[in-house]
Image (cartoon, rainbow, N blue to C red; front, side, top):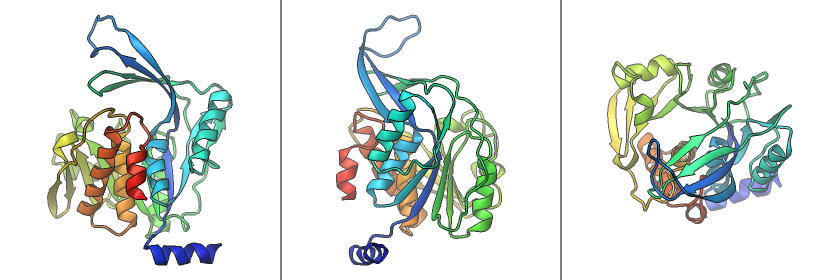
Length: 296
């Protein structure tokens, strides 16, 4: 089977990567409002039911469809919702063997959607996720961090130190915690009120000496990548916006895919922009059929 897989990769031009994701995986409850949110307003909603969500699913599934081997490190409760999440994710192709089960309930995430495609997320306070000892990094081609788990910084540093071929990509944390990585990603809203110096210098204080690129996304205005050599702008790929949930996760997935395919950083960012355009045009947080068809 291994030789058959390698043969297909050569014939089809596929370069499958082993990708480890440290990210949340959720059960999302969708509430669709009849009008935009306003303070003190009254609203009617339609219950959109449950769907798989969280950065782990939103980032991971596109990478699975791109023929990568994707393993998820996350945490869910030892209850029926936790069972549902793992069954759904595993059926869709994510390797969930590294997902930890804590004693307690997995609360639903509430996604409040307005007619203009914007969403408000209401979530319970999560239990603190303590990572165990870091894995053997030799099998991994890429490691992605989008989690507040304790120990993520050490895992990232270990990956950088022990496997020079492993690409470490991280989302800027909501707080000032370190994110050792090669590629740091943030949205323009993540930066508001936090960056009182040049963006490259700011990113270096977060990611350290291993940093090669700092990507700042700005919706339909595209994204800017900063590096020691300067900055470059990569336009967005415009789309008919239906649901913005998961767009940033899809963008990160496209960038990771591009880097694993040995694309330049701007080519990888264009790939991320394309994946994000498919995401916002789909009524779900996980990538839709349009992205799946494109990758096929």
